Amino acid sequence: MRPERAVLPGIGISLVIAIISQWINASVIKGIGAPTVALLIGMLLGNTVVRQPLWYSGTAWAEKRLLEYSVTLLGATITFQTIMALKISGLGFILIQMAVTILCAIWIGKRLHFSEGMTLLMAGGNAVCGSSAIAAITPAIEAKDEDKRLSITLVNLMGTILMLTLPLIGYAAFGANNLLRGALIGGTVQSVGQVIASATMVNQATTTYATLFKILRIIMLIVVVLVFSQLHQRHQQQLSATGATEVTPISWTSNLKRALPWYVIGFFILCIWNSWFTFPPVVVNLAHLLSNWCEVTALAAIGLRLNFAAFIKAGKKLALYGGGLMIVQVVCALLLIKFLL
Image (cartoon, rainbow, N blue to C red; front, side, top):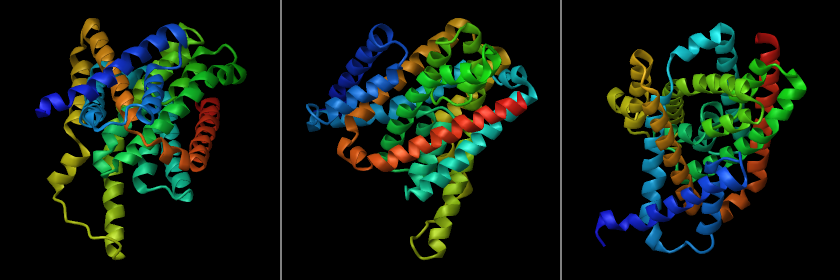
């Protein structure tokens, strides 16, 4: 079979799952999020009936490339003007919330003896924007594919729990204050789709504020990728110094290229372009639509390739990791909102 044809079966089944997931999210179980549905369906099929080698090339391509395209297109939907809209207090809230999330994700991950790749992917996925952040960080820290799949699965499950519970927590903590409820959802929930779905359960004003806070987190993606790349290099150097592993010297340009793969650069360029010249609404809407479809299809492929037995084997540790980090995120957000906003 020709290489371009070899990928078609896997891409095709991933797309079919994505279409079914979008329909389920829109018509059957509204608000749960098509990416989460696609991931779960993929996991079910990939560990039962879709296990033949026929699918491997296409699901591998969809897992890698479609997430990259999703990250790039996301840049056309945001602008740096968001920072001005939220003022200094809003910026401070997001930066501290992200820093606490990252530090706690790394600390908890180390305590539970997860790999460096898993802890950094969990840190970035929860602090920034879920699957898209994990896709951007993976090459910068040379993370294993299995770590990427596990972290994407856990982050999406965490996001679904927060998506459903934060509207209630927000009402209990802040009453009818739409700004504060939007800050809680936009500053905590993982993916863009989950943020919008969660805030929509409240009202339109909360959705607007939540989206603004979420966009500010996404803008920080490029900073997180660069910082994590440096952390990885420092960790490798420490291992080399102890004789645990050999580290091949990497030039500054090679390190920068690995920390900033083409799709992160594309994200940044589109974000700058949209900030300076403002894309027409039709372009922004199209970019958002395509980004969403790329993400959902990629998560379907990731589910198809995920080793469910390995996920279950690490179930207790993953539950402790996800549960502990969710508690930290929510408590920290509630305290920061109270004192900063």
